[in-house]
Amino acid sequence: MSGSDLFEEDWEREVAEALGDSNIEELEDLTIGAETGRDTSGTVREGRVQQVSGDMVLVDLGGKSPGMLPIGEFGKDRKSVPNPGAIVKVVIERFDEREGLFILSKRKAEVEAAWAALEPGATVEGVVTGMNKGGLEVEVRGIRAFMPASQVDIGHVHDISVFLQQTIQAEVTQVDRRDNNVVLSRRKLLEREKAATREQTLSELAEGEVREGVVRNITEYGAFVDIGGVDGLLHISDMSWGRVKDASEVVEMGQRLQVKVLKIDRNKERISLGLKQVMANPWDGVEQRYKPSQRITGRVTRLADFGAFVEVEPGLEGLVPIGEMSWVKRVRHPSEIISEGSVIEVEVLQVDPEKRRMSLGMRQIQDNPWDGVASRYRPESVVKGKVTRLADFGAFVEVEPGIEGLVHISELADRRVNRVSEVVGQDQEVQVRVLSVDPDNQRMSLSLKGVSTSAEAVFQAEEADKEEKRKRKRPRRGGLETGNDGWLSLS
Image (cartoon, rainbow, N blue to C red; front, side):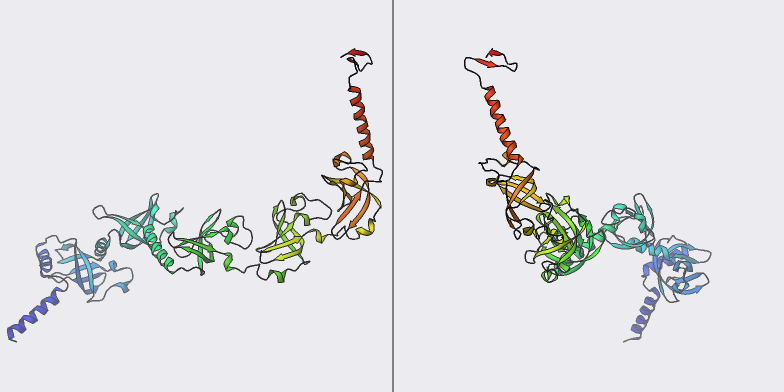
């Protein structure tokens, strides 16, 4: 290698060090601008910190004239001020001919860099500095941006002032440098993130697994629960092992809970969830906890025409049939003796865990009037009673509270009876003869035959009176009939 070649390499290295990140044209522009006073304001340059003196920072721009900027542009903390030799990006504001220095601005350079990064679809971070009726004002790296209220969140936000002074991330939707107009949308960013999370969740989700979710919406048929960007339906029938009338009785908005994935339809993107499935099934082992003849207490949850449902523990209900409610009273509807919400004592009659049924009794808690009835009512004894019901086949007579006997239609009178009402009426007091007593089946056979009863006498008198009236109204031969005054008249 010749001496001229070595000289050329040394020269190129010195030039490169002098230029730094600038090229010769930029360096010439700075030099000419400094010497001729040509306007170079707004030019973005990189420089090297030469010296920090007092409140000013001196920067070497690679030309004859250095630049200067206030130390405050690096922040309030002096620790943030760079040391000599550090590279900084600045904007040339003007050239001070008297001082022979370029006046620089680091903040403006940051703003220029921020504008360069602002483009539709970009994600930016900013601080909410204010609000108006239309939305929020957001400062993004020194640039004032606007976010419409409809773009603050995915759902409706009643009070957007909660975002004031918060640092948020958003997506740039519009940029107009000429009018310094920037529009942001936090909603689009959240929707994009939710879609990504939803896709990942759907790909990972499996039936049978248990996940934590947040209640997002409550309806009359259940609740929608977010289990990671995906909303699943928690049907009202899968909320509790017990009977649920309203979903709000079990869950509330924003509540976190553990749910089990019951079914996934990936084509329709539908997910069925269960809450009771993560709880112990109260019917498991029920036959060990509740034995026939065991007395327990429970709360009446529902009344029906055929009986009352009683909850004996959370999620476990038994039925008290209407016929098991009272010994002494004929109950037409459970509301006659109990009401919903009341706590009552019952006796376990039968438990069927396979069919999930439990039969309960109320009258078993009371004294049974049929106990000792055989000794109180001997066959052929005559007792007083009250007719409680009429049927086609006979009449039921109550001889004491809770004890009814049947007088069959064949035992109503010595003659043939076509209708029970011919002999006795509802609520009529009668005397009856005991035929037989069956305490085990709670049956008593009665008879009116051979017993003096005013009913039969009344019946016979009424029949005789009807026959007499028919005879009186029968016309005489010859067209004559007797009037009420006893005179004869032609008909």
